Length: 351
Image (cartoon, rainbow, N blue to C red):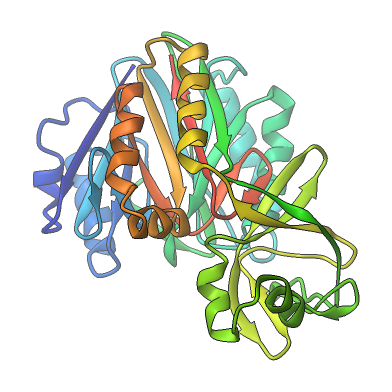
């Protein structure tokens, strides 16, 4: 299989699609003003080709902050695209669509990946989707788009998750997740006074969460929202750690980008040697696939901001180009199997 990348900083979809012939699956990354027209135009250019889309920035060797990006798979894939609706209330109502699509593409663990773009309520969505995917041991990578809208097959949906099942006919696929943070000291907290619906973290070990964070890191309230780039929280999930970013301060509480529950065990994290971590990820992928056909990744917006502030973003894309054809989305949350994480990177590599 092969991967196509096209972009237009002016938002000209035909320009972005120049050179794209006989695609077998398309991902659209658009801007809020043109999203609706881009979705319609894409369907008219490639009628019947499975597609998913969202509002967000894309990248290849450069980041396209404005305009439109197309990422497509062709020459050796079988794919289908669909949507689960009402994700804020009953996504399970539509799970039969995913189950049928798994059968339709002949999904198998070694050669099939699920890629999703979500409008929100990610944790519940992933739990629902993974209940179906794990029956065939199918991995998932994806992320959250902007504006509460996604698209599938020429239609725009709110309160939904758009997904594509992609089967590589000529090799394997494998999903990866990258974490550039490590535990800071021996700080370990029990969360309490949480509000799951509003992602509020009220207390840590019985003390107001805002004061605990400020006292440890010696930061003002105004500095908390940028300090989370270097010091997010981590939620223990078996042997893994899911990163939790701080979104805003609300009184003595912290509002996070993902759900925290009462009695969750949280760690305080610190930025590790992110350049070394990226090199390790590249080595791991090349060890599994010495000559990958393509790599599609989702990088968190906060990682993009951190790398940009430190003058590393362009070097990051250059480093990742060692994998060959690498392209992706800058999202507002990252998905890896049944995990909804922040400040991370998830990706799929195709043999």
